[in-house]
Amino acid sequence: MTCLLCGHESHKRLGEKNGYGIAECDACSLRFATPTPTPAELDALYGAYTPNDFYSKKTASKIARTKRRLLRYMHMAPGKRFLDAGCNIGTGVEAGRLVGLEAHGIDIGQDSIDSARTLYPEGRYHAGPMESLPADWGQFDFVYSSEVFEHLPELHTYVAALAARMSKGAILFITTPDAGHFRVPSDFASWGEVRPPEHIVYFSRKTLTQLLAMHGLEIVKFEWNFKPGLKALARKI
Image (tube, rainbow, N blue to C red):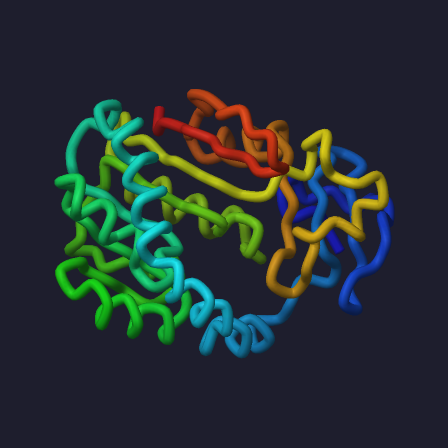
């Protein structure tokens, strides 16, 4: 198993969870589940994503939270074209629409997109991997990706496809669990955010910065967070 970030072949074992090994790369310190779930396993997981039932009961609070985030940073975007990358049932797309952005959403799960189209029909949606984003959607000025990066089995494929659809100077807001946070237990595999095959990659500020830099994106800031979660704002150079 090579590192999903840097390709290095040497890593240390941190424990086991749900039948997967949990490893830390000796070269870049990325932490990840091993082996990587197969495409068939991921299709089964996201084809009918069971957390959607829970998310559908929290739509108002999720929209409100996303609106606050968008209003905080949308003045930094070079335009109003907005993409929620990993939009789930569409609350982020609806938040973007409500603050005046041209709102689009993509998600790997067809079940999620079907729900989004029913709940928030004024947004535009696409089901599929990031590289399948419709060409006629053009470039985006503000990309939002909340609680997505920890799910990615092919980091570089996803981020390269995402960066290719960002306009020059576009901004990217990311949230993902923070493996380097002071509140993460020393027995890393016991941390609640380590739950393969759903969560398979565990970033720190260092490894997230490295991944984005490899695709022409630079970190503008990390928001401080008492809980063990990364909130990062990046820009396409």
